[in-house]
Amino acid sequence: VFDDEEYDCRTPEEWLWLGVEPGSQDRKPVPGKALLPTDDVLGHEDPRSQKLIYKWINVGVLDYDEEAKLYLVHKTNPWGLVRDRKGRPVLNGGITAKGRAPLMPCQYWVPRVCLLFLGEDPRVFAQRVIAANDLRKKTQALLLYNLYVDCMPVDGLQSIEDKSLLQMKQLAMNTPRLGKGSLLHDLEKLSCPKLDESSASGVIDIAVHFTEL
Image 1 (spheres, rainbow, N blue to C red):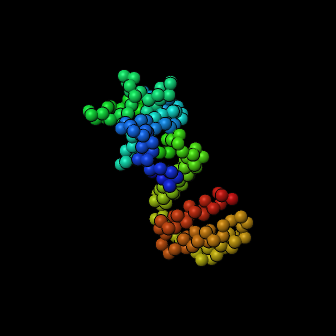
Image 2 (spheres, one colour):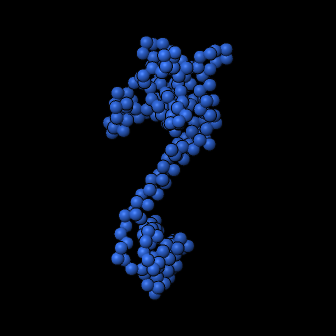
Image 3 (cartoon, rainbow, N blue to C red):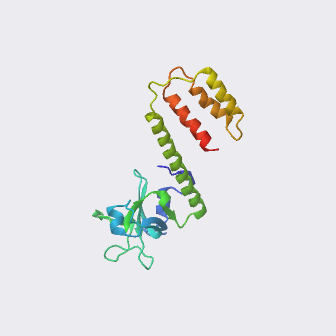
């Protein structure tokens, strides 16, 4: 959800086609590293379990789900190979004439920010992960902010008198390191004849200003 696809140097289809060698009709797994649980049993039963340990593990990228925007990855064996249950190479995304086989314990569907292709610049990928994490934190903060505003009771409260508001503005202007413009705007919200969500957001914004000092 928070991933910026502008960081990618190839489309998903182009990444997968790197597994096709000239003159071959089979598509081999594309090498990469994915952030996966070390315990494949618990990893599928409860991916969010506190007992799980996640690490960057060598994988072969098999396929891509365009609707879900997820890549199918397969953990390599101790020799760095991608093999099925019978020890055979996994080709064409694991799809045969009978269709796709059930997911193996060592296979996972992962988002792009959890998958580093060995053919991409790891520094750009690191920036991509940081940007996605920053956007997630900002979105969580905004959702929490709106929740506080919606839950703040305003019934029965009265607006601030003009004289009191003027004193508050003067104090704000004389306080160093304080963002004057935005704070004065928040104070104006409290002078509305009818207190509503705008007034509630003003109270929260003012509190944020002072906690950042």
